[in-house]
Length: 545
Image 1 (cartoon, helix red, strand yellow):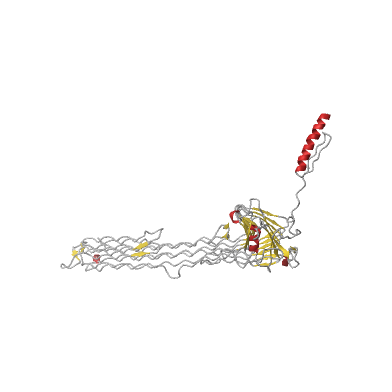
Image 2 (cartoon, helix red, strand yellow):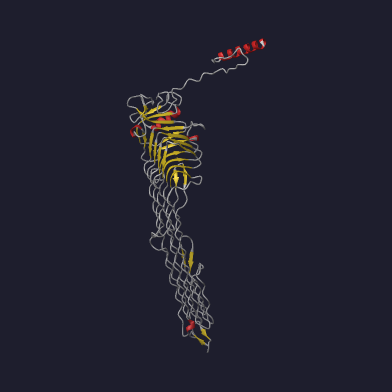
């Protein structure tokens, strides 16, 4: 036992020596039953550590910014810079004389009319009392003058960057945003409709503490563009048929065509040929009629035992229905919220051309053979007139635009947001725009006259049919109402702690369909949603009624 104790003492002495060489205190016992760990003294606390409300503001801990500062200054307590973004740049990359990045900005209570981009891992500690020179925290949230107000006239006031945009960010770097009041102006996002106060870009991490984040109102969506108020292109009058006794086989009147601006044609039927013994039939109008219309642009029959018949009127083009109202939640991206427009109205159908008139015959053999034409003239009956072409379909109206959203904080995919002891408020979403009205279709035109006969009724040519009118273009659907959210996220981690207040404002109403009465619901865009936190990547809980 004595030998063993001696070995223990020797080993303990070696351990003590090694520990002493490393600056640690060695601990051992004469008893083999006792064992002790050699304690390593904790590292000296950094003077930059601590709570934002109580930690001292030191030059080595951060860059200082004041409304009274100068961006040519180094950003120290005694010589602060003027703008937040310049201070953030110095904190992220170090001051000009080679100092290491402090990764913190101390901002005076006051107003800064600039939109800022904050790299992940750089803290923004606002609400500093600068008049006394100690830059201590100014007080609780109910003293608005103590907060640093970030309120640019346009744009999204605060962006937290990550990845390549952040430059200094690591996977675990987190920005602490403390003691600020962020105010987004109405309709100040890049779409000129939505109002968004803060965006955490993909994979960014931020803690919002003891701050106020306020979205402004969204703008009402613009109404959809109306189609032209004048009618669409009209049809063309058909050609007249040749008279009887002008040829043994009088050629029928050539068809006429209306070419619409979408490339669709309406063609009147060709007039029938007149001949000596039997008049031929005309051709039907084009395009073929759709549906069950009684008027189908059929061709007229040629004279045989009976006189010829006129071509039939072409079918009218179908009127387009009203476009659907906007539906769906929209999507989030780095610019904010992208809403949904109402569906455009469809184009009206083209009118069908009238049928070509039947041809006449020059010789009547019903009872006694009778020639309609004098012996010294050609013996053919008159030709039929061609059908008039139909009118073009009217253009559809354009869908109403979406109303702007009001969202205090947007958290994009992979980001991590914590809200602690802060107030986060959405405001009013804009109403969706009304859908545009459709255009009236063009009028169909008269068919050509059949050629005149001679002596007998069966020698005359018959008229071409009237072209159908083009269908009216569809009225468009209304735009989506703008949402109002305290927080909106997509694929993000969001923690709202107990002392935080996160509330929406009022959502916008969906726009009505074009040319719709108050009782007409089809074509009305969906209303926006008002909810304290809305997750675009999953089914959100039903908001309270």
